[in-house]
Length: 176
Image (cartoon, helix red, strand yellow):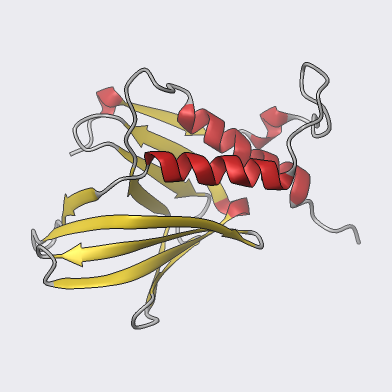
């Protein structure tokens, strides 16, 4: 069970990023879209790990592993292996997260460390079973995410700023 004394919640404050899309405080150019995406991908790849839970409705153990991360157009894709009941049933799922709908990230850094990504709406993320093409809607997604306590206390905040940078600079609505 996740405890509220051991997590960091980071709201996406796109407006706090301001209009500083071309320069940082030290007047260096802001990172390109590719640089930002590469940093996000390398961070998720570095810290993702096996995540185990029990389904609350039937107490069957479920394990999520073999994470793969990618960007496709305006989506952040997370593909992973789902194993239920100690591997008796396994399949791959892919979460399709529209970048514009990522609102905040919560890092639970205790007994079963996870990173949970929340959307702006109740049904903004599509989670697709790649074997059956069945899908469901979700407003959050948890992945196993482990780091040393003192390694990067601001990781969630940094990820949210990176997604916000992509939203602000590279996903501007087209003018009429």
